Length: 247
Ligand SMILES: Nc1ncnc2c1ncn2[C@@H]1O[C@H](COP(=O)(O)OP(=O)(O)O)[C@@H](O)[C@H]1O
Ligand SMILES: [Mg+2]
Image 1 (spheres, rainbow, N blue to C red):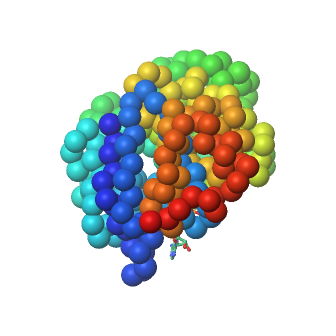
Image 2 (cartoon, helix red, strand yellow):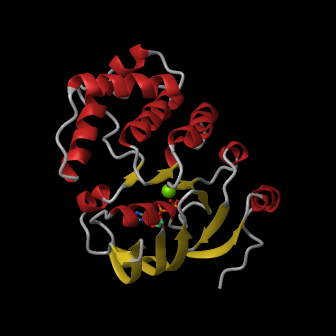
């Protein structure tokens, strides 16, 4: 379980998160919604250990142990995964090459040997099949000329290959692309096995029509203002965020 307790976070002296409490349980899909600028991406980045943010108070606990002081590498080793972990354009790397490097660096962090070329090839083939994707997709250069949906596909493929325990998917950049949302929605349950923690961050309810979250939390002005289940999504669509009281 990932538990965030009374988390206060600053960037450049400005307080962005003002006491966030959030519990993410294994085997459940969680969604985090909230208006622009409420601190959703900040929360994702802080959980991953981005050095730009300062935790001034509170704890991030993974299975009861604080990870506040761990480096991003050490967190990745514990199974944390954030989408868009690679630069938007990586010169000269095919998806296949990139994924093998990403897998080997996570294996190295866990003290494991690199995967053999043959084993990797088989793993990649299996995951491409799972995602109904032609094998030629993996030989394309990463992100070059990709549509929103193809970017998402490569991201989901990365998720499938790395198989992390905790996935945080921050949907900000692709929010307007319905194809991209559909790729995520169709595949998130497929690639994440049992006992995984999934947090989908979005301000569009469309993805939540496909992936029914077990729990939905609303972040407003750096605090969780309301929690509920999938039905809350409809209320938000109807009434926006204005009716939810900040305390
Ligand atoms: N690198 C940064 N420098 C200064 N302010 C930032 C930075 N990143 C985010 N902020 C501010 O933090 C607040 C929350 O941003 P963000 O976490 O991106 O919100 P959301 O993802 O919910 O739209 C905003 O007011 C934003 O201007
Ligand atoms: Mg954001």
